[in-house]
Length: 490
Figure (spheres, rainbow, N blue to C red):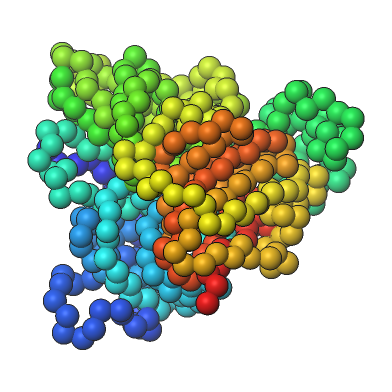
């Protein structure tokens, strides 16, 4: 069956017209090399309707007009990234493992792409999976400069299943810089104040800070969950006031590729009365795990295989904001199904943790090998002053993590803060090896949630030389300094 990708959205969006661009980036493929013409990937602006109000946001999409960039494993990732904005930008290919010079990370791999200019990218796609792409310049991602990137396996087309991409976002009518100013400028005198963009219902600062500092304090009173209240939570750019309805066949099989592209929100994926089978996370296959609700941290992806009941029916696929009542989603519906209106608020969703993570096992794990090097990373800082860091240092003042090519590396992440942090390493995959003191042979990932005051250990092979970003994928934590780099010794 034909895939459903952001099916009815083009009528709701307005991309700026194409502008002439200068091809400044030199392609990697040599002149005259065989292969298809590069995909033109355009960065521009569009108008989005949210809560009956028009909003100007960024756009990242192929020139074909689709909202998803599609490739096939074994192909070259041949892309001409064209910046149609009047400001610099740069796009990171989240989950792919390109050569370091093509990672799209300002300052580490490439300089930002100037307004009206273009970069060319070309590297081989060695594995399939559900990935995504987003800006790493300033706070552009928080203004929706992000989109799905799917690398199909050649055998996928033979499966009798309907493939659907579900891309999740959080949205505010306030500019991200305004939110940052409120977060960083107001915490010193927060008691009794309502800071703009902050979710006070999920915070416990005064009760937890003494415990964070190693003094007397009751850490059991709860961690901070959401530090920002958004105006809307989007599924394929739409709210539950007007959700995307994807038509499906009675008794059919569906593959849901769910991407958490939110800037600062973890979700529960809720299938309601349906059961789903986890078949992959972060683009890598896992041994099947069946459930109806699944934890999904910022930047993570989950592929779910769902068999629909026979007969007519409508089946909401909801993303429920952790520690809150807000929700978004899409509706799977047979042709003659009656569709009931869904409220944008529902039951309280408990905080996202690592219950699902502990159940996952890679279908193709790393080969057994003792680590050659162990790196300890402390996640530090806190809500007071909105000061986030790694090993006590903000990015720019940090000391890079150093590895040597060919090593098996153990990375021990210890969270010393009262918020969970989704930690992402560019250019590599890693296997989750321990949650706290519990050893597991877990999933292969590129992003893992490290719970408040908890620890997670991962293993990776140092097989992609260069310098690579390692950071919290909460956009606002990263902007405040929770980032460092992993660098290879010469």
